[in-house]
Image (cartoon, rainbow, N blue to C red; front, side):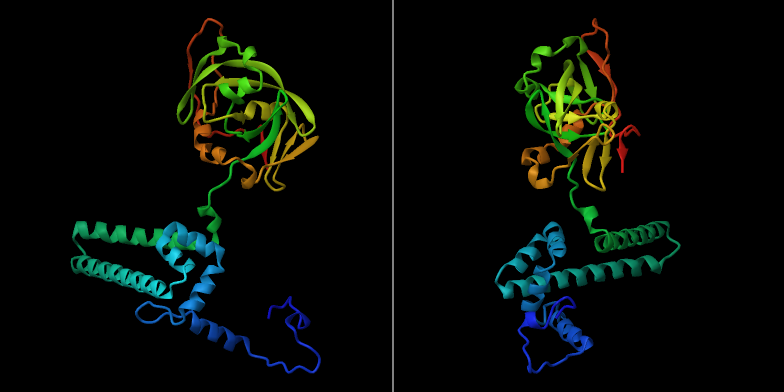
Length: 316
């Protein structure tokens, strides 16, 4: 029983006989159930299956690195699970044998230049593998996908999921989204250009001012309009600085106006799946430089380093 559990919750009543078993003996018994035979199969496959199923982090890693083993754990065929365990044991044994043979050949002539290079590569790979194993144990979240920062906003009265990106110099709205918000009639085509980042997109023009609603407060906002169907609305560094926004990752909120209003960042379940699939395209469309502002320029090219961050938006 766990330290937090009570005897009454386990059905123990007055005058019941309770047998105490030492923790060492209990852990030893559990360890025997989870042990492996010399051929790699499980001593108690049902116990091993149950133990691994309960470890969500381990199952996630297995689905990523060894989906066949993960499927065998989730299935009801213990014989198949044993076969997979034996096969993995055979593969590991074969790999170790090959590595030992290679090292033996290399050390047979330690003054050979090529042998020295291979020994150095083997030592380097061993360090990489140890670093990877340490990360899996102590920093497993590093292998998970990071959900980007989205908040609920309204643009000209139309609700949107806004992608907050302090690495994009300008706030961006797609042509289709601007049309849906009734703003395309305000497009100033004198501000055409090319947005360069990871990729490049055509800047159709600029909408100089429109109202956006964050929380319960309205703010003025300007937009670059891009011909980027894979990106809807990106709240960039220009407006983050103008409205003194704080990206507070500790409380998972975006604070606007120096803290006069706070809106929570959306959880993954609240973000449309198409946005999660298209974050890469949004990054390609993000602009970190302003287009030329002369009315006579039809196609002005602007170079924009991608991923650069400024201290204008405070990341806590």
